[in-house]
Length: 401
View (cartoon, rainbow, N blue to C red):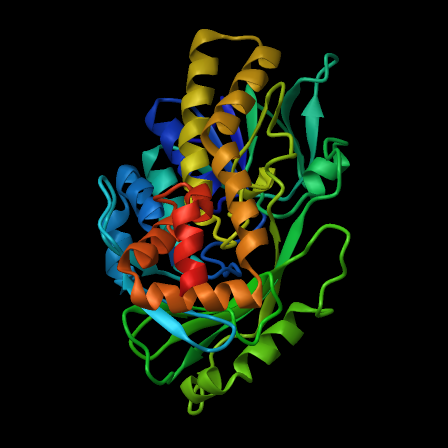
């Protein structure tokens, strides 16, 4: 039954929004989940689900369905700019699965949306154009293409799109972006149970990827991060993609392959360190507040984990009746305490390591030192502090080869 006035309006039914809607509905709150798209719908992404993401999906009760629908990944393969590579199994880590998955967002997002509905959330297709605020500028709802909808609080889970924040005058500064493009191929040669990360034939800082979606199909893409104040080496993500698939190794994988979807480009926001994450009555989750890994470009695990934190905060704030201004400050502190240090350190490691000669040395050293290899993999998976890659011991192993 539709809510007369929901406790929470969640804008955006991607992983962050649907997870948040599910968690709040399970706690007994009236939740209205809005999205402009009709589901299931495609979403441009690398489609990788890390062990950290799988841990949250298990908490949400959808891991069995995701496991049945996705392609199991047991290893990572990393290629340096000079074409050398190392392969590492995904290491076991306490409390997390010992594998990853690749599952197209066309399937994943609808699994999570349906889970939110099953938990008691109402889903409605609507385009949100602006936020509603009261005389004290507290957010009290949203304006859609058909009506003004009111709620006690609003959560934005709109990904890289900043349109609603801009119209509301709440985007203080230009966002930091990455750019990427991907498509899907069938009849791909040589796929295994490993995802491939390529630092060859792409502009740095950036990488190309081959993420198998089955034994013969894959999500193939390439992207790069924009350095502040510097022009990108390529004008468009398509140029980066075309350069990547011209790599002889990739060309060999795709020699008999056929694309099964159009090539799509997309932006990535990774400005969490300076983005505002809350206003009175408004909570931001996932990429809507720039929460994307600035080293790997991965965002699903951060989206799901921030949804967990947002659910706890909103539940507490609605139950206790804390003032909206205090609630916004408390939520912002919670997000910063959980993500800021690791986010900043990922960016520092990227700026140091994403250079040809450094990557060449690290990959070569990882071929010889299992300890170094596992450290790098654990950092990439979010199981280790990124700053541990800058210790004297690690740097010496890399320089010594």
